[in-house]
Image (cartoon, rainbow, N blue to C red; front, side):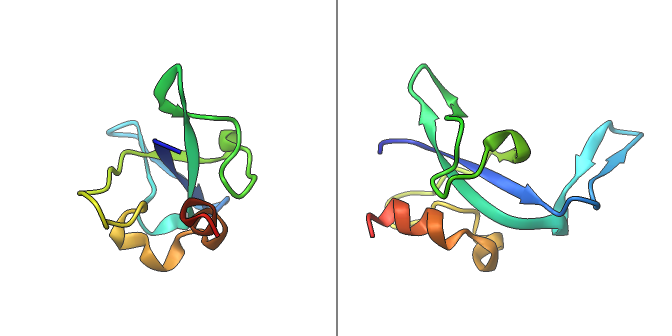
Length: 93
């Protein structure tokens, strides 16, 4: 797999829209971080399911890109929340 899209699974009842900015504040509301294969025809978009089998329509895209070789596929601030099934799929286990 050459490219992935990082996706955030949010706590269902905690999404709060900031009326002044019109954006959702997701900060500490992240339940888990997942990975999906990138769509070959639109590399910024994920395929329909994450590597662990979740429907991507229920997840929020994360613009994180690994800093380089050996860097984690997920944002370091979510280290304790990355999906172990997605991790296993990416490492070929």
